[in-house]
Image (cartoon, rainbow, N blue to C red; front, side, top):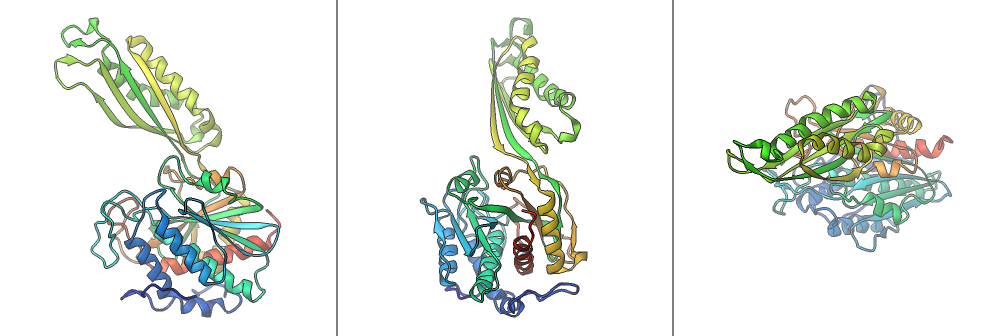
Length: 418
């Protein structure tokens, strides 16, 4: 592997070697990877310093394509140039891996040499790490393919626009990303785990994330004469309090449904009942079945609660992403691979997150699993949380991520479960 990027000062010159209890990689990959750590850190830091928002990941996609092409691969760019797909090896059955390219509309607050150079755009969710790990995976697998030691075909999917709605996964799927794919895998940075640990879970992993906005209207008036109005502040309060409570009685509690309002506005004067009010919130659900019925149920409950107040209501229910439901066999494969890569004691059970992830769109069509990649500094109590301006990682996580994904690719190709 070669790169035109300058290796950063202070980057890890040596790749994290095999940990105690870990299995060696085939084809002298341990030795090959040991010399490549600083190069991949350079790529990660370059991407981090030059973040691009959703659907505008042109330079990031071009960088990845160049590095893959230098290694002898033939990446296929999306027509828009903000994503790409790249196959490695040969075979009718494909094992796929997905990374996301986009950054968040946040200001980078860190004081580091690789701080974002783009105002109000930052890689505060670790997509720079995801991209670098998947690039490292592809370059490592190409080493095996060139020596005839890759027993099948692997596909790398570098996706645009994970952080927005509508998101990029359906676009990649429409471009053929899942053609011939038997299973798909991904990882996500997780600062609550130290670097060197992996979180794995079968079943619900992240929640569906939809948004709801409502607009209430009616005759306003003086607060001394509420009976002559449709008291919109009161009506809004009923919706805000009663609808989430009613959902808890209309949906199986095992569905993990959570409705939370994030924005409410009605009126300006303390002694005037307004003629219009609005509220916006989110609906998060862990069950696919409950998610499918949520729009109709939530809309009807809102209308039923508002009806006795005399106000008029308009409801907008907007789909976000489905829940990520990890396939049982795929989760077992990647858990075993992570144990082989890092040692069994470094694989822990991942917590369920109520956050949303558009990796779910892939899992609606093929089996697969997402895992959590520990990115915290071992032994440190300081946690740089996701979606915060000071988010950063212990860069040894890149090496551990590559090892886990290489083992996963080989294990998934070897199994007949998919």
